[in-house]
Length: 317
Ligand code: BDR
Ligand code: CA
Image (cartoon, rainbow, N blue to C red; front, side, top):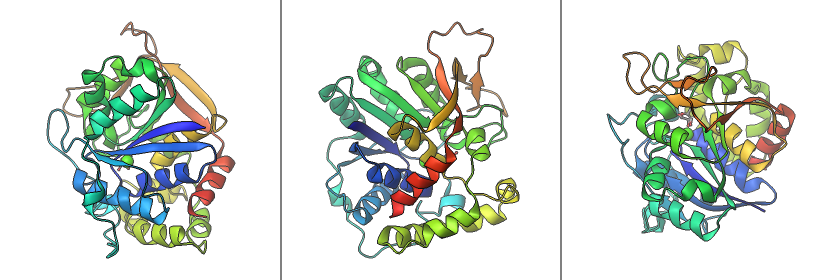
């Protein structure tokens, strides 16, 4: 079976991605590590526990990680995911934070990968602070990984957070830089524009959310806020015009759980802009090879959307 360690800033699409992994056959989620991003790291921990609760998987350990980026100001995405990161639809029976492990997320990543050398894939659907700190503490970490699957960055300099910056990279550009340069192992990137081109129809969303299960009812409640934001926000208008919704983080997760999901990928050296009034946090694709990088990431270009729908349906079944 595939062993995954999942690093999240548990907003709504992170929750969808976790549920997709938990429903996938032959996948073992060894732990969930939390980081700042869509909301505070405390909220992220609470949200991860709520997701595990509705999936009856509270035995999976949840670890708290970095509360802030390596440099610069913390940003969040409360306008989209809700202030609490899960649609501001609280649950009085949510598990308490006492279930969070004492060990920090960064130590847990290092320990778990070292306990399973060559077997673990990291799936990061959040700002990359924990992954960057982990490789600084243990430079041998990437050589012991199967791969890293990341939702983040962009390929056509189109931003969703700043003019040119995608959220996960913009929320910690230095961390993204460190990860893209220091993880000398296969890196798969589900970038923002790719997810925009791969949206699922709203009609699918209706079918998906009206399955008669606790998981579907949970998702319908927490997703409501972002569905409304998708339909009103300036930034998101194109998504509605294109008749679809995007579960960004689920694409990176689907790539990690099923090798046949990615139909087309392109291998390129990539880095991240760290300065620039408009471009800080933007991913840079070095197609000509100016950077002389040996590490080349796989940029996901095309995926099997029928397979994706099946995995998404199973996630809430
Ligand atoms: C990314 O930003 C977050 O808001 C989402 O959870 C996703 O990880 C999309 O840019
Ligand atoms: Ca996320």
